[in-house]
Image (cartoon, rainbow, N blue to C red; front, top):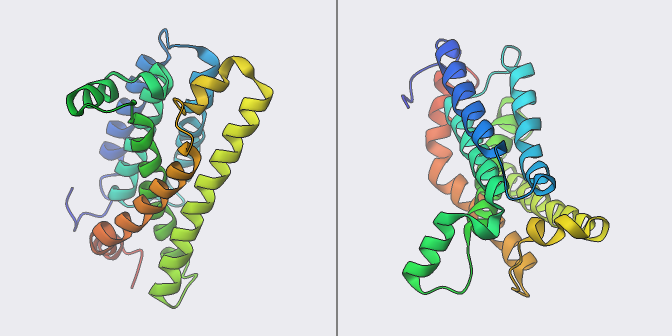
Length: 213
């Protein structure tokens, strides 16, 4: 990705590539998944996100970095929905290669759950000039990501209470007693790392696109 490229100047090509990749993985994901209730639960956030991006593509276009990160997060969700997080093959390969006890693909998802929303939230609050202080902005972004992670854990709990059939696959605890706490900790870590690693790059894209002054 070119830091100096305005995403609005090449929006057609960017959108076409994004849509083809998104729909291609979505189609694959929806063909004979492990079970459809779990698939819907896992893929639903990606579908909602895609609809929001489509309706805001002209009125509120995002930076290329943010679009790409959202696509990556969507793919992570769709892969997890197809296999269920506890049975994604790459997670099994990593577990076997390093002598682990569980499939940790879900942990990748929870890191992304903090990492990617952090950049989305950062873009929104910068462009809307919500904060005058970068420190307060970053504190808000990290807190928001941790709150989103906690809400997701509550949703998992509610699904477990309401649907016994999909509960085990959707929760994916794999017998780990500290699964909920570790999920939130990883989302927190992901948000902090995203701000540290991508903050300057994101600023350059925002400035090049004319979203900041």
